[in-house]
Length: 268
Length: 294
Image (cartoon, each protein chain N blue to C red):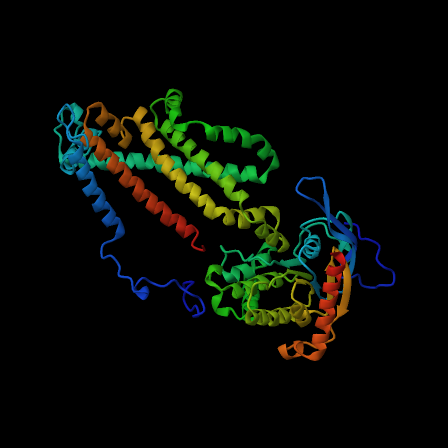
């Protein structure tokens, strides 16, 4: 695949770049087009953890699907390390909102499934499985079937399955939606730990402002298929519940909520 | 170590009847059903009465017991016993041997025919689902074949292949194939897209994706097709034996009807249902083992 001309002022290409990307869908064979993503520009640096906030139906998941290679942009380029994304690949792992752990594979086999597909030897796979099972605190469940686990446990397995494959970019589409606060908080810790170990770039879609403040280096608001607001999160890691409840964090939350509601009000 | 060993308490197991304060019926449910069925059968026999020839319209339980020795007429000879048609007396030994021989023959015809039909149906459906070219060329004729009244085709198979074992096996196989082709296509089409996308994002190529994700994901629905095909295969084998074969449970049914032996007719029916039920239970157990992850 031809590499697009890089910005001469930048030495390392961004891990992820949306360059003037538009995505249109035809509405149910009616001939009418719906613009899900509209001339969107966004760059994400290697190792950066970016949370994308925004209302439902405003193009967040379409961005992720284009970046994953599940769908192509109608216009513009979606780039991974300077190369146009041309289809799904192991370098861009995806954690879905749905439960995608393969029920016909035991927990350890799920974690090493991608490695096996890439021809990694069994002894090496077993080491990786043991390592990640320890990280997600499911060592005793290596031989369990997924249906024997709780929802939160399966999410941990799904994340470990993707990260064990050592992707350069981790794409997460509301992966913790529907979980209670305690489980979600625990999973945030697991994700941060795994991310710090793997060092990959994270593109994380969420509706939850607190979740974004807990996890992100940078928060991007996407409304009507465009980036309408960006903000760096100035807090050190790990971010405790007390920190997220502090005045500084509350101010940031209000800023984000203000932008979300303002954009929605203008649209209506 | 089994999968359930050492699981923590946060995994909820279904409550047992005793924990819910329910008392379990002391007799197995299948035995209760069988006893109730036999009582109802005997009652039906009493109510239906006799036909013009003085024979019970619905054979009573003693009639059925009396018919078991008649099975000896269907022993082909061997183990020191000639056929009754050759002048040998009707004995219990011949009846037992005939029961084993005719049952075994019908079971083998069913299972071999079914196995070949299931394999062919699954492989062709997988190939059609895999290849756009095969999809374009084979789907339509395959669906036409599926719409054919299969049992009505038995005489045609009989004309083509004569009274031979391959004719029966081919017929049962085609019945199994038609069911499995449709069931497998539907099962493959119902595999959730997110499994495919997740596997692709893990770097799986097309063949590995097909073999290790799509087929296993479709397996529970394919299993339903296998169970349906198994039922159809038993109907098909009896129909095929009706027309062409010299031995087998279908042949006994046919001859019992020819000679107005209501009791033997019913007995052969019971034996067929018994074997079909037993083989279905074994098949279900095997399929459960194959999908023990559900």
